[in-house]
Length: 123
Image (tube, rainbow, N blue to C red; front, top):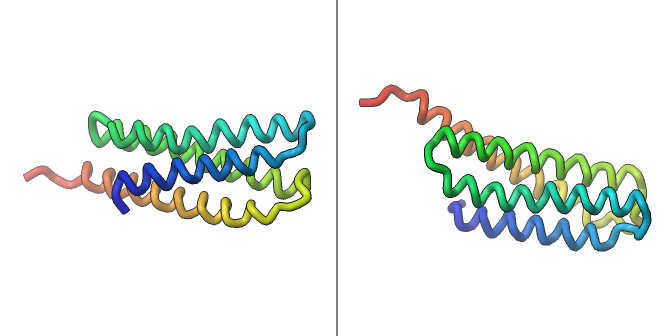
């Protein structure tokens, strides 16, 4: 997957979370969950774009660490929404959890690849 494809994928991911957030109830808990999950999911997309503009491998790793943390936080909010039973129809949550898992796997693999490259002796 290219960086451009992953930029598009993380943006689509954030947009799907925004759609989910719009379905949360109009009450204190719904507002809290909505605010938190929209912030963390859009941060995944925004910070991945920033990682693509990293000045060095170390900067890339640092930025990807932020992306991973935000994706993990998004996972937390998806779990909270599902487990709190705040929504009548939770059918959109499992595909979003699956996408979060897949994105996290990609980010972890990318960090490992760059870390390994940094540890290789220079010729």
